[in-house]
Amino acid sequence: MEPSYVPAQQDEPAKKAGKLIMQICQSLIGGKPVNSNLPVIEKRYPATGEVIAHIEPASGEMLDRAVEVAQQAQVSWAKTDAFERAKILHCAASLMREANDELAHLEVRDVGKLFSEAVSGDVPSGIDAFDYFAACITAQNGDFNKWDNAIGYSVRVPLGVCAGIGAWNYPMQIACWKSAPALAAGNAFILKPSEETPFVAQRVAELLQAAGLPNGLFQIIHGDADIGAAICAHPGIAKISLTGGVETGRMIMSQSAHSLKRITLELGGKSPLLVFDDCDFDLAVQTALDANFYTAGEVCSNATRVFVQRSIADDFIAALTAKAEALRVGDPMARDIQMGALISARHLAKVLDYVAIGASEGATIATGGQQLQPQGFENGYFMQPTILTNCTDDMRVVREEIFGPVMSVLIFDDEDEAVRRANDTDFGLGAGVMTKDLGRAHRVANALESGNVWVNSYNLLPPGLPFGGAKQSGFGRENSAATLDAYSEIKSVYIQL
Image 1 (cartoon, rainbow, N blue to C red):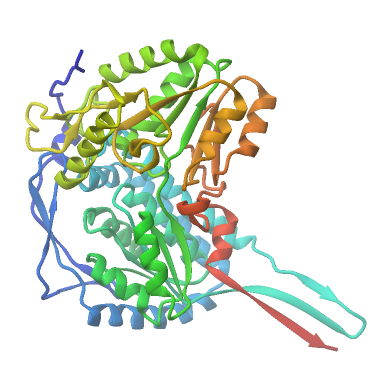
Image 2 (image 1 turned 45 degrees about the vertical axis):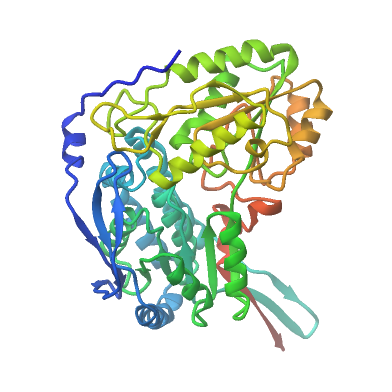
């Protein structure tokens, strides 16, 4: 049985957002767009495949100028009282909330994900970061020591100019999660968005400027891996924060080594969801679906390895398959659609290749596995939600990150086996546990080798909770006070009395 795919009616705001007018995206240096003479990069709308923007990549000279401007602006910003910095960042958050729908429309154009996801989750999670770190910076304290004839204290001081290199799946969230703690700590920030997703970053920059952030403190450098390498090698940049794949992370470390930059790497994952037979069955089924098909599966922490206890496996797979087949795929702006497009034709081909690899290795395609051409969006990059069963731990589809709507289901017998197999991976970004047994929840969460563990939920990321990986999923954290510390360093002062 195939899912039902129908075109949906758009409401008036959606129709307005759907006017795909060609745009020119230029780097933003010192508060102003800057022309580039380099060949443009085409930006396509994932839902239709049509070119909707030309991105002008920055040159090395433009990067030099951006760093120079950032260094000048950062000196004054570092001296600005923390409460004054916080007021500007709180104001920026307020302006972003007023523009929530607009930012969500831009995110749809960037990624092809559902408007309903962007407007309710992705955009607000980025905005919350500005409020959170604005509050944190006003409460940051150092240490104080006293001896018979001396005192000593420590303070946090900013690093200088920091940079963020973003992935394409969460442009709003990534822009905010990286810039908010950097700015709060007194740094200047340069963002290189993915060349696939240029729109949201431009609007974030405008709203920060409107909130009173001085020019030069948040700048945008557009381009591909070439300018990314130049950012990593630039001696005037003190820290790089990357969201991307493992191979990109290795390159970032190598390119940043000469100048000994501080680095935060949020990389890939192949996260497990452990479904025990004492779980809330309906909740577990829905959680597995959400943890695989949200944002068309293009989420680094998604639980793409679903381990199900044998006693409930048949019923669980049947329920999963029925619900997956009922998902409606199509126009990301439509209210009754439940999964949007993948980012590009090349990425869609890669995901479909993985499904074929899984079948060749012996996995069963329980549902899905095919490209889709919804009516009115025949040239978009759509795919059926896909569930692979009869999977084994040694299959490539179980071991390698696919980054698409492909779930691998595996069966286990007892808790020790489930934990052992869940940990048998090079990754360690996320993990989930579905159980009603509180003791088991704590025990398994403690045993899982992962930077994040969700119990009876998945992929929930409040701003005060650290997010990041173990093993080859990277190091360092997004969100939380730990991230604020990563954008500063400790200065100790000893005073002889």
